[in-house]
Image 1 (cartoon, rainbow, N blue to C red):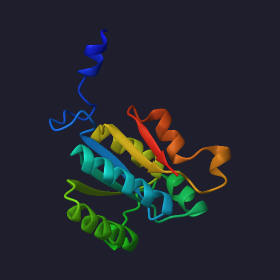
Image 2 (image 1 turned 90 degrees about the horizontal axis):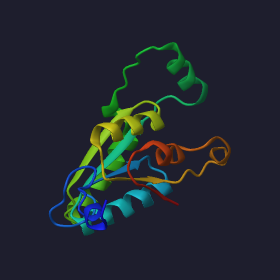
Image 3 (image 1 turned 180 degrees about the horizontal axis):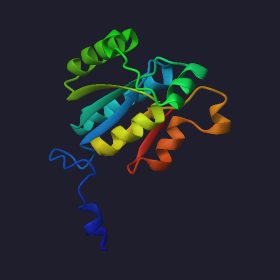
Length: 162
């Protein structure tokens, strides 16, 4: 394949007529400092590239053993996502920021295991790039983090913001 042919390949999520950069950027948000920096970085990229920014929040109402017990039981536990105050707060702030900077943004909330839900959403959305915050948990250095799993499986560039 000639270099020209490589340069003319359309972005993964579709073409962006106003730039050669990404047309769709997925940023994951969870309220952590690294996720906040990641969505700020993704928002800046979206603004400069005239791309659509999709912000994904994964609601996980169970922690530790409770989450494992629910997941391993196979039970379908309905979650009232409208009552997730953290998601409401994050998305309200993001709406103000994206409107202020004229960024085409969409806000999506899902529930479940963060790594699995993010990967499933990436498969559905087919973004040109994914931006996530680095994990601040020490244990993730040993067993791996959501970011590492995405880097290995996303099928598009993944930027991990410290």
